[in-house]
Length: 433
Image 1 (spheres, rainbow, N blue to C red):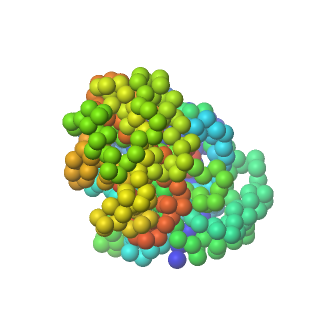
Image 2: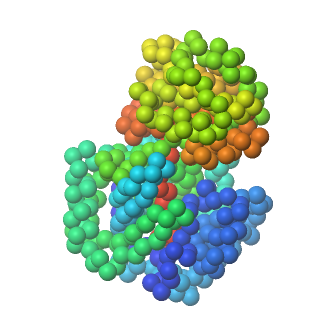
Image 3: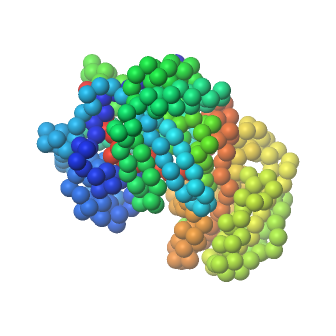
């Protein structure tokens, strides 16, 4: 049973413009942007959630400084704790990477942490241990949640959405505040309380929750909880989370393309020969970055897009579209131990049949050779730099596929999903006391 509750959030004082202090999630901020964000405002959330910038050496003093800053801002009135427990409705109006305008609704609350074995919170991606130590050191120093992880709930009958709409309608709209992210998307936050909120929570307690974004942070929160419990302290039993319905019309998943470095990519003709038993070529190869961009941005228009991939070879400046053969590709994966659900995922096909079988990459080492890009222009720009030997472009994983795989207890490779827009850090904080 999921235990989701309101909490007394700690928010920036109304006199502070949120646009000046909110920041992207810590793990998507490059070093150059981190420096710019730190200089933008002395009260920016970056000083709390990113005490060690990318490329800097992690030292205990940096985490201690973030903890002291959090306490000082509360003492100075920069941050103010809510008088009563609330849920925090977050409405986002955004333009996606595909250029379409959308609106997504979710809310921020506290979740009582449960182990994955309890099947209350379900993961869908694999994680690496190295990415967790930074967050654990921040927990130990600050004893607070500075950002949220992103969870999904089924809401198959739309009951939670209706209850949330009722709660929003009963709220004091004057309490809403707005912020914009670096892409110009609007984020509107509104505290909610009252009986309508209790109805939302009662409906949620019967539903499983699925991690959309934040697997590393959830696992780190479990580790910190266990540390505190061992010391007789249960203050870390909860985690601040953002929840969104799987049925929300503004919930979209975009693909994350792969940029391969430090490998030997064969010439196009040889690559296609290796792929031919399990893939067919769609159309003719195209030459040049602009022609490649036009083809790659239309991958989603292909029939059965989950089986379609674009491969760009920088050395030859050529792009080819391939499609996995049915049923040969799925049968190969199922014979290799994958479930039918996993065998139908584009990331499984890419990592197993293209990267492992065609290119000979050891799956255990593949992540050491992969960088990621979330748009075709960004990926092609990086590929043109000369640092990469191959670009692999794919279509998005469906939310229904995420749910089916998580229900089976299976996981996908890292960066299998790209939920957009990201959640802003600084809308609300939570002290673990």
